[in-house]
Image 1 (cartoon, chains in turn purple, brown):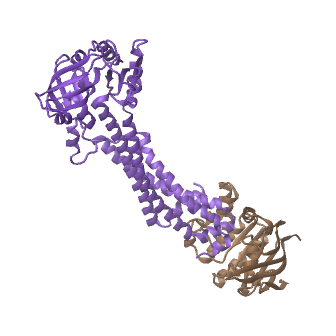
Image 2 (cartoon, rainbow over the protein chains, first blue to last red; image 1 turned 60 degrees about the vertical axis):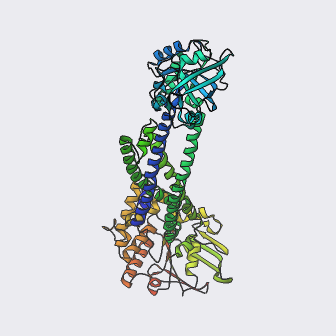
Image 3 (cartoon, rainbow over the protein chains, first blue to last red; image 1 turned 45 degrees about the vertical axis):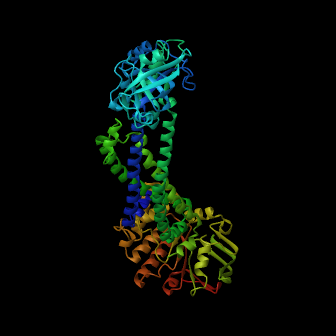
Length: 409
Length: 229
C-alpha cells in the first residue's frame, strides 16, 4: 500500500468515534436502501404478475388493429381451433379464447353499460383469477350454458343477486340486435373497481350465439410460467400463427400500458424518499469532512510548503472519503444482503397483509427481488453521493495559502 | 562561488487593519552555494518574512528573488510548488511532521511527491535516518518521539532529496540547549557533508554561534552582515 493510501486510511482513524458514527450512517443508509429497493422491485414483480393473472394474461393474440379500435367485426376465425393450436405450441393449457362486446345490462329496476366477455369455461381459470374470485354462487358451468357471472359492484348497482336475471342488449357481429336474458350464477370480487363495476362474463358458446359470432372470437389470452420467459413465449406464439393471418401478438406492456406507468410513477416517488435519506447522509458526511479539513489546515499548509500540490491534497481527501464510504458500504451491504436473503427466503409480510391478499386470491407475502441491479443500485448511489460530499472540502484546499495555513491553530 | 540565492531590492508590505506594515524594505542579499547563513534579529525584524519569500511561500511586494538560478518572484503557484518540492528543504519551529505517518514514512513523503520509486525512497529514508542518529526509531510515529528526535526527522526530511537550499525557521526554539546543540551540529554536518546551503532564521545565540555568516535584520532592513569562523 502506497504512502498516500496509508495516510488516507490512518487519517480516517484519527477520530475513531467520529469515523464509526459516519460509517454507521453510511451503512444504515445502504442497508435501508438495499432492502427498500429490492422489496420495491419484488413488489412490482408481484404487482405485475397479480394484475396480469387477474384478467389480461402475459400476452394476447388479437386481430390487427383490435387493440386501438375494438370493433366486434374485427375477429379471429375458428378461434377455438387456434386456441388449441397455441396450447400445443406453448405446451401449456394456460391459453383461453375470449370474445367481447359492449352491451346494456338491465335488471328489473336499473340499466348500466357493461363489457360482456365470452370465455372458454374450461380454460378461463387457467389464465385469469376471476373464476377463483367468485365470492358468492359459482363460476360458469359449461361453454353453452345460458348464464352469467358479474362483478359485485355491478350486482349492487343493478340490485340483482344469485338466481336473479339480467337482460343484455347489444349489437351482433352481423349488425343484428343481440339480446339475451341470463341468470346470474356467480358474483365475483376482483379488487379491481373497473372489472367489478363493468364486467359480465358469459360462456363463449352462449356469447357467440347471442352476438352472432359463429366460431369467431376477439382474443386468445396466454399466461406463461413467468414474465422472464415472455420474449420466448411471444416468439413461439408468433412463429406458430398461420401465415397471412393478420393477427398481432401483444405483450402485457401494450395491453396494459397504465400498469407500467403506475410502476414508473411509484419508482420515481420511492426514489424521492430515498433521495431525502441520501441527502441527510451526504450532508452529515460533508460536515465530517469539512471538520476534518478545517482541523488539519496547519498540516495541509505544511504539505503545501513541502511542495505538495493542492490537487494531491484534494485527492488525499477524496481517498479518505472513499475509504470511509467503502467501509460503510461494506458493512451496509453485508447487513442489507443478509436481511434481503432472509426475506427472499421467508417472504415479507405485515399483520393483516396475508388475509387482505388472500381475499383477492393473491400471495400474502412479498419477496425482495435479488438481482445485480437491485443489490447494487442503492449502494452505488450512496457511494457516488458520499464521494460528491467530499468534493467540496477537497476543492477548498485550492484556497489555502501555505503561510496562512501554517499559522492556523 | 555560485550564488544559490540572490535578492534585489526586496520589499514586503502587509496590510493590518488598513495600516501598511513594512516587513521588509529594499533588502539586497546574496547567499553562496554551500553557505550556512543565520538571519538574526528581534521579533518583527523580518527574518521569517525573508525566509518565506526565498522559499516561495509568500510573494514580495516588489523586488527580485533568484533561487538556484530561477526567478522565484515571477513563478506561478504551481511552479512555486514544484520548485519547493525539487530544490528546497524546510525545517520548521514546531517540527511539523505528519502525525499519522512513522518517522521513515515522513521522510519518504517528499520523495513520493517527487515520484521516486518505493524501493529507492525507502532505502534513502532509512539511510538518512541512520545518519541523523535515529536508527531503530524508524517505525515510530511523531508522538512516540521526543522533540529533539522529531526535529531530527524534520532535518532528515528536508535533506533527503538533496535540495539546493534548506530553510530553517527557529529550528531550536522548542528544544532544550542539549538537543538544540545536537541539532545544530547535525545541520552543520549536513551542510558540510551534503553540500546543502542552509539559511536559518533565529534569535538564539546558540544558532548564531554555529553559522558561517551572520546577517542581522532590524525593522525589515539588513543592519549587519559578517562572516564567522
